[in-house]
Length: 230
Image (cartoon, rainbow, N blue to C red; front, side, top):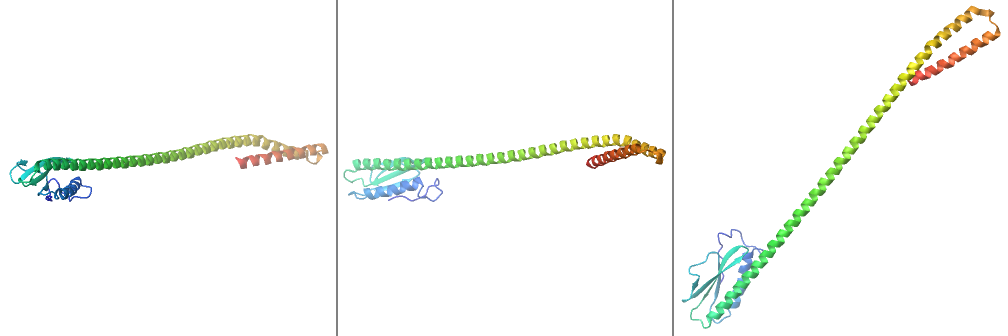
């Protein structure tokens, strides 16, 4: 029979993926096969070896240390000392136990390797996602920087345009002032001359006065346009 007593090193309840539980299940099958012999044979699993590990007196007893998933276990056999041909059969049974334990240990190692591979793949996927997020954040910040730079360039260009317009306005205002001063003097002189000549002015003089006044009015209109623009 199989000993189902839990060891202090096994605090959790065995699951289908537990290598110790798998070994127990395989030993149950082996015990069923060995139970067909004409003499009684029991298989027992323990985490602590008994003393002695081999006893030839009735009943015979043998404990075989095996390692499964870094767990040191001891598989024991008990048989009647008077059973005929017990020696060779016990040797074969011991080899079967070692083979079963080796198979369970290999399966456990394969499961651990698969878990490590899955964990490494998951970590690689997480790192890839983190790298993609970091790249996306970098692109977002770069786009924001480009937008800020574009806005700064636009503002600087508008300021330059305003400065140019302000300079042109100041220049036009100065030119208009410089023209208006002599124009005012010209109009004053023209009125004084008209008053002095009075009705005694001939037609040629009147024509000159009229043309001069018209030219002054044109210049005044231009200066008003310049003032409005400035």
